[in-house]
Image (cartoon, rainbow, N blue to C red; front, top):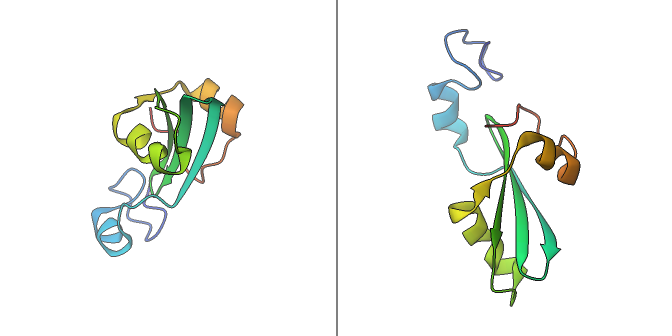
Length: 94
């Protein structure tokens, strides 16, 4: 595989030079509430995407999703695709 930005064939998805230029910040964040107190958060990054799930207090999903990104458990690829579709431009990160 080669870097998607500069064709460097020594790297897997994105080379270090491009990552330093572009950064590793999330490109997009998608939030789904499975209930009032359970959130699933899909995060698109430069190298692919991943989804996390965790329980939350349920008082403000607009703020609680950030904690799910930090401490939630990664969900299986098939479950993530069932919830969000194949939203990423890159592979699902196991």
